[in-house]
Length: 301
Figure 1 (tube, rainbow, N blue to C red):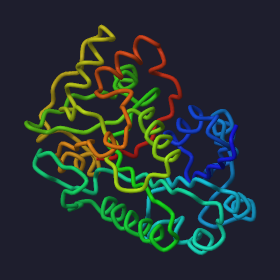
Figure 2: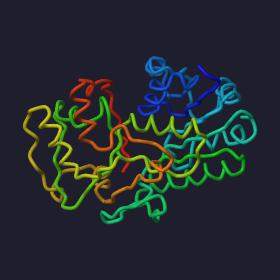
Figure 3: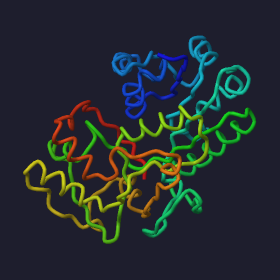
Figure 4: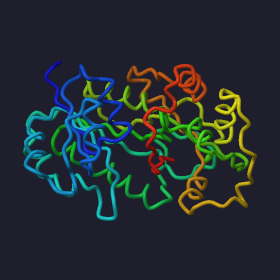
């Protein structure tokens, strides 16, 4: 193991994959809001610490030795919780810090009527959560300029992988095929988030990068593909206009865009799963599709 020390604020689904798949990269320390999740973090190769909105002496000590910082905590109404409580530490008491990675969302682009967007496209977020994300991106980039540390903003699309996918939804009866003509969503397998983090971190690359696969697609197509692999009947089609949905679920359908990923490819990164079909084929063949069953309601549009 080399001398890298990676500190992760918010060691959830994607961050745990980053650590578990890259243990040779260095020592991983990560936070959670619940001691009940400590064992899951340890299984992923992460030394767990509690972060409930305030820095502890243990977090301060770990930050002092950190070479790579990853932030995977959503901002709230009061802004980014890490910057709000740790900005002074980040700016003045992390002498070894070489790189910062901020996990954001393609939701910052808002609605583009199904058109292709890249990192130079206008950001016109619709939801409060995406407005807050864009502000947090800008705040982290500002900190990077002030400290001279490269900041990579990874704009993630809808996250899926083992334990969080259409196979699981079909098995537990929650899969739906909502039909809204022209609607597409962007997706990314958690292993490609892990891979992109490793790629950018080991090269200390900063900038804004869309981390999303090559195939924006209608959501009902993904359910149908998974059902075909499982050899089960897909759920019936439902008209989006008359479907019973929560306000948050309906809000995701208010944004329609195709997100391009050429920028991160230009750095030399190759996607392990360039589309949902290759990912679903692998998950079904390997049988790992239902590993780690706990799912989060958070989505990245």
